[in-house]
Length: 310
Image (tube, rainbow, N blue to C red; front, side, top):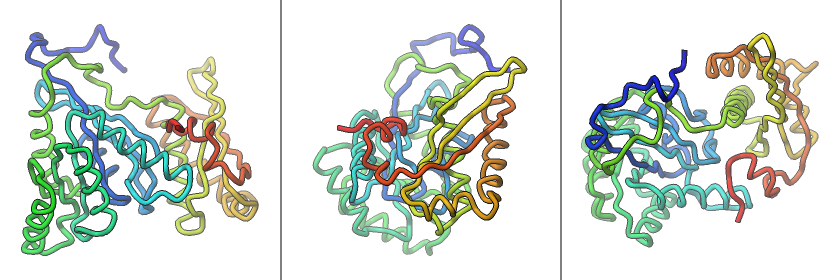
């Protein structure tokens, strides 16, 4: 049973507590969502083999000693080509600007590639202090990692460097402890047992979007999104959820539906099971597919995804 605020066992001396925000920034597919889930100890953010799957800033909450750390999983920073891309990149930098600490996550195999150079130039423009976390260290020889760390620190004055494997958890605890030490003194902003600040409707949409990507692999490009249109609490304690999958072309709609509707049925079943487990209620999920050619440039669609069009 979820505890209410009155039931939370907070540290008795609130003057000893600290709380702050940490922005995770990096190029697409650097492993930010995997790291976020590892730091919090629970699945919060969408994780697939596809890049650019995180679109909005997602807040996750972790405790380390008397510190409450609020992580902001930002969209990957890349070269924008459309309105959606522009808003995703803007959201990423806004998350970093608002944070008490910033972690730049770089894949060990990626090194100083074009995307990472662009991010470092962005840090230089803001003068922000940042921690460097080199991820996927199990994929690169040790001596190469040391050289990469030296090259990156020569390029930008990072305050600290951590070698981690977000997938396996190596080095993640040390990073969390270091971040806890950087949180400003103050009361916690969330109850002790809360691990995310994401509306349930958005979380449900993200779960279905993940299943959509995992199921269709390379058949469906990033021309799709999922919106939870109706959320109806039923008398028996279950919830009826109606979601719309938006695609840009009829050919994509056929891919999502599959032969005799089998593909969308399997996507729905997988999403329903995880939504039920996540929200602690039996979910009755109904999926619909609609074609909307320019949804990625529609301000209303972007707002539904948690982005704020400028």
